[in-house]
Every structure is written in structure tokens, then in C-alpha cells.
Image 1 (spheres, rainbow, N blue to C red):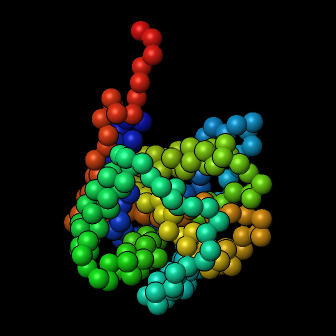
Image 2 (image 1 turned 180 degrees about the vertical axis):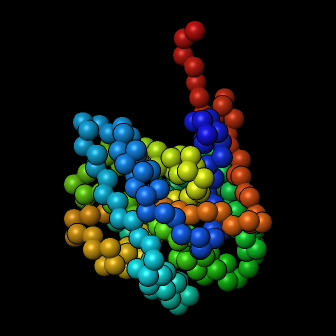
Image 3 (image 1 turned 45 degrees about the horizontal axis):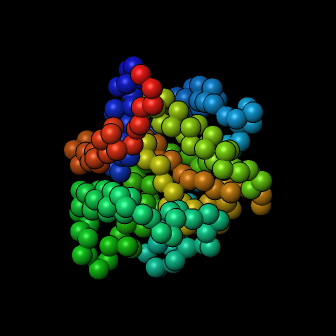
Length: 221
């Protein structure tokens, strides 16, 4: 699989099989991903790879919180700015409606928030979740580095025939995650990434993307 194909085929998959992901494949992907760029070569990410019974237990605990209507732990960073100017709210709303309608959750469903939280806390059935942390001393530059690292990981997963779904949702239950993985007090959970093989017959949602002219400006010839 070449790079263009990996980029084009990467999607946030929300239906995985329980087929185990071989440890050697994960090690190969994560070892190769260390070549991702980082300013000053800080390599600020710390990743915990959770599978098997520890992941099953984490899913049970998080799902119980979700189904109980638990609002979650206090946030360490905002998921989105308080005020999003146009066109960002429109893009967000369109993608959310498309994504969850494909999972059978309509916008006017009164139980929509709980259903969405429960699906997320089960990692959509994925047999592996990667949890990416940064030291709380790190700044915006290092958070950008972590984003480039995670994109590298997700593209390498595609090269191995795997899919993924980045989940900022896990920060809602960061204390539950932190206790299970043994994260230190000075570590901030950036997100989780569900990893596995896509379930056959699952809805394949590809959210739209803004046209090149909306997001790119060429200066010079």
C-alpha cells in the first residue's frame, strides 16, 4: 500500500471485529512511528497499549459510567473552543449527523448522548486501544508533535490492513483510564485510538472534506 492509498483509505472506523491484533504487528507499527517528526526531537508522547482482559475491564468501567449518565471527570483541556466561528460549526454538525445516523442513532433520539457515550466507551468493539499521553509541562508545539505521531501510527496501521478510530472521548473518563494503565500524576491524556480489523458489512462513512480552495492558499508561482 503506497502512502496516497493509506491516506485515502484511513477512516475513523466505528465497527470492529474481536479478531486479535498480533503483538508483533503493533510493535512493528509503533517502532516505525518513532520516525514521526517532533520539534527538538523531544518525542513527547507516551503510549499505553491496552488489550485483553485489562481492556475488557476498562470498557466495563467506562460503559457503566456512560450508562449511568456520569458527566465525566473535569477536563484537562477543552475538546473544542467555546466559540467556533463559521464554517466550523456547520462542518461539525454535518459530520456528526452523518456519522451517528449510520450507527442507527438519530439526532432527535432523546437517548442519543447516552447511546453515543456507550458506543465510544466500548471502543466500537476494538480489541486494542492505544492511549497517548503527554507530560503536563508540554506546550502547544508538543501537542502538535503528538498529532503528527498519531497520524503516522494510523497510516502505518493501514499498511498492515488494520483500521483505527481516534477517540478524544476517553479524556472524559481519564481517571478511570489513568488508574488502569498506571499513568503518572504529571501525565495528561490526549486521546485514545481504537485499533482492529473492520467488521464486515459495517456502514462505511466517509465524511466530506472542504475543497482545496477553502483551506489552502498558494503564494507565488
